[in-house]
Length: 128
Picture 1: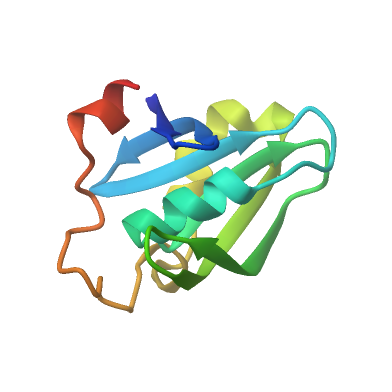
Picture 2 (picture 1 turned 45 degrees about the vertical axis):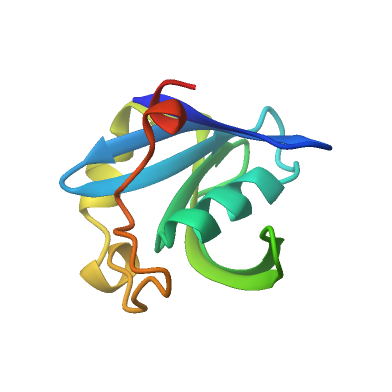
């Protein structure tokens, strides 16, 4: 488990944890309450073309489709993915919960337009 940090000219973006298991990358955000910005999570999911992200917070479990727009260097890009929200007490079970999701939730059907494999992360992204 690691985290992701993107340093930008005007702002940084950070994802709390990045879990790699069973050939997948699963970004994880932890929120103390039931609300909070997910903009860095959208950015990471969009850049890596991932089908799933996890948020831990104080709300009951849910699975929802997220439609967001991120800004790349040259243009705005629409991002669509599944967000699995879990209560904080399930943090130690995250691998089991993700493993038990239907394959259509955890596998992305849309190929990466840049030709980059979704699981490729640079060394800097892995170590921060």
